Image 1 (cartoon, rainbow, N blue to C red):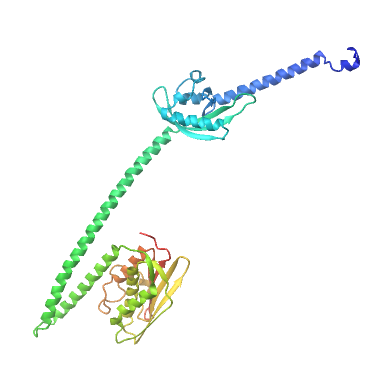
Image 2: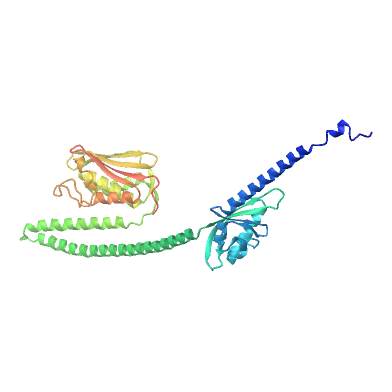
Length: 401
């Protein structure tokens, strides 16, 4: 069936010149808008405050902004169309190739670090961040931002070098301190042996003189002074041994350690009405020598300061929480003024007159030192004429040396 071109049906498909003109103007406006958008995007890229380049799959510079050209040390016109790799140090070129390969494989945003070699021979450390850019039917390009981290690297190297120097200085000082410590220990121990020999000879001489019928009475005071000096020397030796103790953490049954201590103090309990009771003592991680010494000092002290009591009652107490055991030795002795509780743990600290109660004033200082060595604590509680309780706290997980 043929249609007449002049028929109404055919005329509906024809547009008037005015309509065509309007459509053409609309298209031209869209083109101008797109061109303006492209120019804006190019201007934003060119004037961006961060250095950036656009790379092809082969690593050629399709475009470079002003900051990027400045970083690479050349003009934009010179750089465009060239490969980026020759602007890098030889060691950095494989890094760039691998980064581009990952980007064009579609593996998302990639980062890396290279060294840029400027035409003037300057080497700059540069951090890279790359992403794939797709635009319509055009070939994909890599958008690469470059951040000059040279100053940061220099500061980091300077800090690293300074740290290395400080570490070496610390090691040298630690070695020197260890040498001085060993030297001091040797001098003290050697001096102690010499003094011990001298005191032993003096004690033997005074003992012989005491057997002579015409020995003056004041020599008895000299003999007592020698005995006290000898005891002080022994305490000092013990204190030094504690200072330089090579501790070894083992499982220590405090109940068994207490039994050994009670055997050692039998000379203090002979002929006295002494009753010792104890709660169930735990097994702890620690040094058996250190723990036995602590218990020995506490029990011996309790027996000393209950000497005036017709009946002596000692109780070994146990408290526990999530982090530590607290062991206390309670007595019914003469007690002490709680105001001076810290004095007992000081070097040569005493809570009672030396003429009444013997002792060197070093025992409890040794206890505190041992406890602190293993992350513990030591303290005392008491009231005058109402007895005392001396405690030590021992961590469930002592620090390793």
